[in-house]
Image: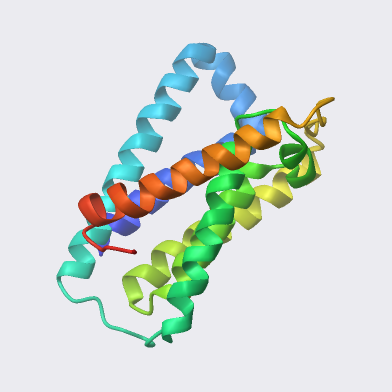
Length: 188
């Protein structure tokens, strides 16, 4: 439990620091852009690994169940994850989908967290996915307040086809390869 909580503090904390533009600018002024990005990446990866390993340990040690999700939640989660994958791919490809979602990476993270939150009733899952969902909501509000530029829709729909196709490929890879072999929980 402690390892996952520490990992979440590191991972989400470094992302909160990145959202505070004044603090971010001071850090970049002190260590340079490359130093900041390197340190940010090191902390983010370390936090992510600690979170994942701590989550696995906590669940293996018998994290208590607070509720037993109905079977329908598993089906809803599978559907939501398809949209999450499309949103994640949209964050990297210029498209109408990207322009419509405005901040597709955050949309994808929010959908991912919500989907896993409704499908899992154990304390470890609720803490992990609830924390990530809360951070993503915070970050979306922070982005809106900063007034970051929004993506612009391209002239054609080729990017949209690539986003949907890439989202389907990512979804299949997560469902059939990553989740059963890395997480140890088959979803299909």
